[in-house]
Length: 189
Image: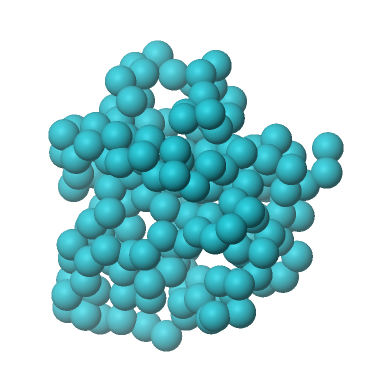
């Protein structure tokens, strides 16, 4: 599956539904949907995104997911059955996260608080330290488990899996994602 630049641009500002179900244990939070994500209605969908390969390498999932083609209903059921969910700080799709303003990220932080209070995951893993610092006013925050919780959920800030985050690898992402998954009870300790 491929898209022309014009086709992708037509998905600008589109909202991608959250992936959430009963028994949510580990909620991954992206910054906002990219255009490929909006086109496929699949979180972390860009072909260069390392999210699903990192989940598989970590043992969080045990089968490949072809995110670039978009989730199948079976993919959605599988992730929900594993207790894994996805949402975003900001709902609207852009070509790059740096198109978002500070006010959007701060408002997204408040929306995320309400989402977490409603769905009650054990662990929230926000993918992107800069977005987290901006959204929650934590200018000195470091990656990893945070000292504070988020509406009762253990809070982690994990690396963004985008191919634009070039200093991370599938292996380094898998290591951090596995730690959050162990905390959530998705992986054995």
